[in-house]
Length: 320
Image 1 (cartoon, helix red, strand yellow):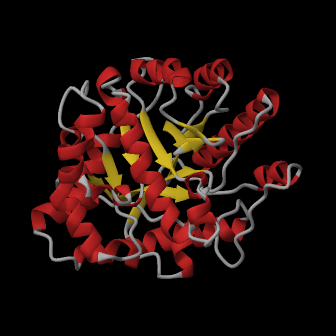
Image 2: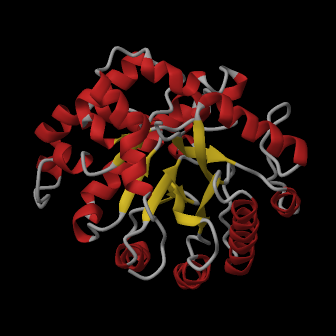
């Protein structure tokens, strides 16, 4: 009997996190979808997982949680990691979690990473595509990458819906529909330009939304990016294929086929953006669209089960 799907991109907001973010006027409410720790919401989540053939969700916060004050940022990260781990402990066969870090505060990140690594259910780390308007590839974060590399950590990226701080996006209210795809691609390119995947090769990066705009740009990047960055150790397209990408694309078969051709089916992982896409499509369609995309049986098996099974097998961020 085939093993169920691992949904690598799903969200959760416990009541304690909502109350904390409300203190700073940053709480996000998603009415009508099950994303809190209410018993009925957890019951609905598990029922939807069963109906879609999903055996495990790997959870991250659905909202940004970075603060200029390192004490507040550390408090937020501890609250998130403890509450998420509690949920994973209550449902060890169905829920795993990514640890959150109090970026941009490096020393606090290293301390929280050491602490969170010991929590039940933690299988990796999550980070937004930019940090309070600063690139996640900024040199000051190198020591965080060094530690993640030492631990051979999975690092799940997620856009923060800031429209890459561009008025040309935000003034036209395009941050959600278009800006997130720019964030995804830009984060990968910044990491490539700073040679993060080469300097820290043990980190397993997961990029959401099929990499955003990236699958359509690889040939252009190979032609033009080395002119601006002649130090790159290999063509950008080769480095881009060292990342993993989740399949959240609002059911676009064309986007999925493009990503599969650009990156190879071995670099794609099933994701849902749960519960956000429930406003647009049933949970099971988030995965069934993959099966109806026209890809080969081998590609489908790789994307839906084999890749995530290999990546998350005994995954953790403890000492290695």
